[in-house]
Image 1 (cartoon, rainbow, N blue to C red):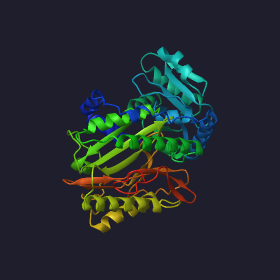
Image 2: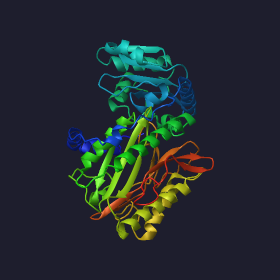
Image 3: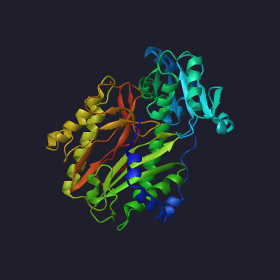
Image 4: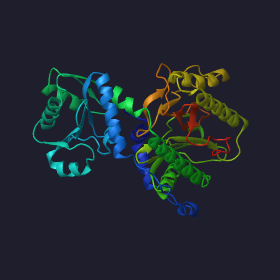
Length: 417
């Protein structure tokens, strides 16, 4: 899960840039107009699987000596219940107790709408008036026998909610709920992996179609808008961060205007979602003929990505995967550590309903890999003033090692294998 991930950061830092990109609607090539949706046969997560998730969460709560976990709208609420809701000032809360049925606390003005949207759990309590939501949450905790125990707060839940509950039950100990929510979400089911697989396949198809339309003078805004149009043609919603030339050295791009020129590196990063499950793919190629230097650094990046893939086996620590990729780059003479030129960030992040979620392939993380975990594999080589290369594919851990959802790039001028 994430607090401020790359998509959110880039959108926030470059809101004006994004608005301009939307206004700059691309001319859609005929080949893209002919694309058809790739969403046939998709199987959403069943309510049966969601109930099993709740049971697992309750088991983890009892192991952690938690009486309940409280969460606002967001990806965790959707994960456990299938109900989509954003966190707003009109508090909409799910209480998952260690024992008993889930309970909902909803604004009285939205009660009818909420009941129609809620798929799991029949205990719906409508609040109104000053502090009504916190009084209702506190009463749920008392009714479920959780008011005298510790209660977990899901990481995206606002401090305001935590503080309101604490005012109602001053003796209540509130702690992080990550051991429960991340403990469930880190291990993906076959159904989740199938959705991630489709999201990644669609992302590659979108990139392939858009890259075929690269032209000299194209702006990064135009390329981003074109990829968004391709996603719509393929039946999904998605976005892309496009970066050209020397700005590829900045991992999250630049808001500076960029026009594509012969010999520029082109870096595109991001993905689409399928039933809420996210893809995250980066391709770096060259517009024209690559220089020996560009090819050399691209091949170094591919070796680092391969090293992480080979190291990602059940039982390995997350930090050992990061170390494997970083060693390739350091042995070349870049770095050390996070220094630039070199790899300035972690090698990968968990992925699922959030594009960045627990856990992370980063130094110091002793979490051991297990089958069902899913990560990005994206060591970056950044050389300020020159260029940067990032190859990113997502992988899932199996009993035999890691498997990519997508075919890796074969060469700088063969971004799709």
